[in-house]
Amino acid sequence: MKKIHQFSVLLLLISLVSCNEITTVSRQASTGGINEILVVTNNLNQWKGEIGDSIRSTFTQDMLLLPIPEDEFKLVNIDDAAIEKDLFKKHHNIFIVNIDPKIKDAFVETRTDLWAKPQIIIKVNAPNLHEFMVSFEELKENAFDLYVKNERERISTSYSSKFKNINISKALKKHFHIDMNIPKGYSIANINDSKAWIRKETAANSMNILVSVRPYQSTKDFDYIQVKRNRNDLTRTYIPGSVPGSYQTISDEYFDPILKEISFNDMFAVEFRGLWRVENDFMGGPFISYTFVDEKRKKLISIDGFMYAPKQRKAPLMRELEAILWSVKILP
Image 1 (cartoon, rainbow, N blue to C red):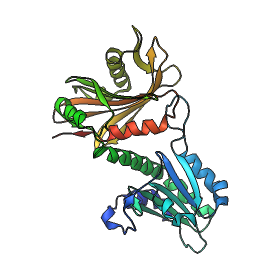
Image 2 (image 1 turned 45 degrees about the horizontal axis):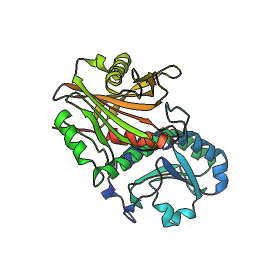
Image 3 (image 1 turned 60 degrees about the vertical axis):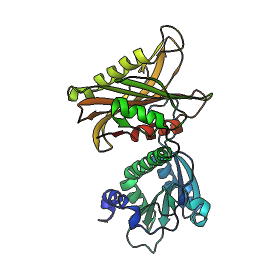
Image 4 (image 1 turned 120 degrees about the vertical axis):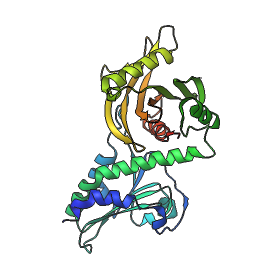
C-alpha cells in the first residue's frame, strides 16, 4: 500500500526520464488528433463500467471558460489486443489499464516516446478493480497535466521548424527581445515597441495573438484587477470592432475571468483566462493570457491569445493558441 501513496511523486519522476534512457521500438512520427487520448482497457466491459466512468470524468472535464462547454480531451477506447497494431501504437497520448490478479502490488509505468515521437504512455497495473481505482485517484491530476503538456509541446514543435513564420520571429526579437513559434499563415496587423497584434484570418475563424510590454512596477502588476485592467486598456485602444465606436473588452456578465499563479517555462507568471466580447457589436469568444517579467530589462510582458470561431469547436483551437504562447522565450 505504501507504493500507492507514492504514485504522484513516482509519476513525475518517471516522466522526467530522458528519451535516451528508454528502450524504444520505433521513432516514427506520432499520430492522433488534437486533444485526443487513446485509452486501452483489458476488455470493452471495463470501459463501460466504473473504470471507464472514472477515466471519462477526469479527461473529458470541460475546458475552462469556453462560450459553450467542450471536453478537454476526446477519448478513443480499444482493448489491449488492438494496441499491438502499429496504427494504435503510434498515437501521441496513450493511457493503458492493466488489471491482472497475477500482479502483487499496484504500480504505474510512464514512458516517453516509446513507440513514436512525441508520445506519452501512462500504464496503471493493478491486481483488481479496487486497487486500480485507488491508484488512478492518486495519479489522475498529474496524468491530466502530462497529457496537456504533451499536447502543447507536440503542437509547438511542429511549428518550430519548417512551419515557423521567420518574419514574425524577427519582429518579436527586434521589438520585445522575445521569440515564439508562430506558424506561417499569421501576419502582423500592427506592431511597435510596446505592443503587437498578430493574427490569422480564414473563412472559418480568426486566431489572434497580442503582445504587450510595459515597465515592471511591483508584484501588484500580477493582481487580478490590474491584469484585467491592462487587458481591457489594450484591447479598447488596439482591437477595434467592425463598426464605429466598437472595441473588444472582457465579458464578465455570466462568468468571471480566472487568474492563477503558475510556473511558466521556469518563470513565475499568472495565467488569465476568460471570455471577450465586442462592445456595440455581437462578436465574442475565449481568450487566455500569460503575464511575466523580463528580469534583465525590468519589463512586464503579457502575451495573449484570443479567437473567434462561431461555427467551430473552440477547444482544439485554444490548445493551438496555448501551444504558441507556451513556446515563448526571453532572449539573453
